Amino acid sequence: MSKIIVYSAPNCPWCHTLKDFLKEKNIEFEDIDVSKDHEKATEMIEKSGQMGVPQIEINGKMIVGFDKEAIEKELENV
Amino acid sequence: MYDLTIIGAGPAGITAAVYAARKKLNTLVITNNIGGWAATSSEVGNYPSYQFITGPELAKKFEEHLKSFELDLREREEAISIEKINNIFKVKTKKEEYESKTVIIANGRIPRELNIPGEKEFKNKGITYCATCDAPLFAGKDVAVIGGGNSALDAVIQLMKIAKKIYLINLTDKFICEEVRLDKARNSEKVEILENTETKEIIGDKFVSQMKVLKEGKEKILDVQGVFIEIGSVPTIIDVKTQDGNLKLNKGNEIIVDQYCKTNIPGLFAAGDVTDVPYKQIIIAAGQGSIATLSAFDYLSKIK
Image 1 (cartoon, helix red, strand yellow):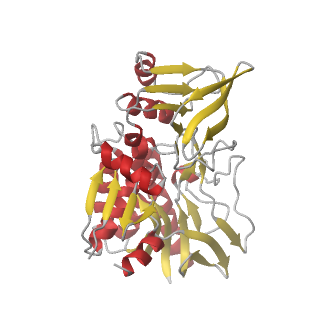
Image 2 (cartoon, rainbow over the protein chains, first blue to last red):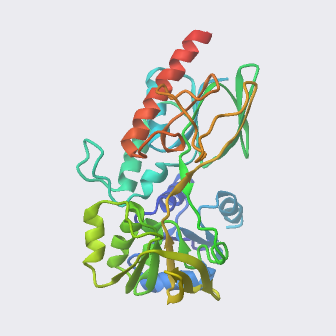
Image 3 (tube, each protein chain N blue to C red):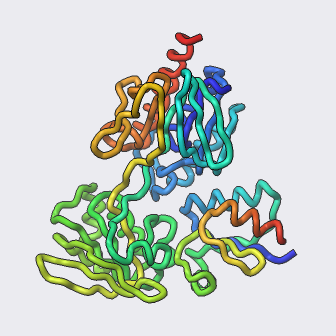
């Protein structure tokens, strides 16, 4: 199974919603706190071209925001 | 068929749901997210029982309380329209249609936009409407905060710890915010306050690199990589069609309610920041949520 990465910030409600959604589905993921890891934050912006959290990386594809349908679709291919 | 459908789960919707559960009403809650706008607050210090709590922590507490009851909770689902036919409400979401005897609209507000060139193009490419979410991405950068209220000052204070330089851009010379917050901004070497200044355009390539402002008739270009738009909010709009005519809104598109949180449509109630209640506060929204459910309960006991 390929790795799933969530880019999040501590005070961002949609980040919590996204992480809770993955936890409910028992999906393992790496959580990167962009407020602490600036290098990874820059990497995220370069990969997606988007400056906002949350973002999720599945199969190398970046999905911005909590786009439930897009995330579910991508998870099917994991 | 549900007794009560609650749209939204911010402070108003959650309180309405707690009261409904304790009245043992057959209740449905439809919501995009739990906590609503309150969840984006960096600190809440005026909600009794918590001397200090962050927005996300308070939202988590709300959620725990809500989920301690047996309710039909549809999370991550958005209600798009309400119809009232033969005294029954049909609430449509993108996925399903639900039938209910009463409805409480408690879907709050969304950020107000500037409607200027560049705003749509650079959303999430330097422009953000949620400082608590996205501020960490602007470490060491030059940014602008647009607005003159508490949320704008809140954004400035958060950015003072992170950004290199912060322009605070206000359309007038009056700030409608707590003095303590304004003092913090004024006393910071990082913050430059531009009063009587209008934002005309956001400029950039892949990301925001500049913005054009108009100060006292003179155009000025500011080099910024981030723009935080904090100019207040507008009520969330939901399409309502009923046998009893149109839902009454005020000039600001807020739903008009009476002291019982009744709208002009029998059986349809509204609570919290989506209504014309004065002062948009967490505790007021919560209070209205309880009124709305108690009113709905009265209505239900009369039609039974």
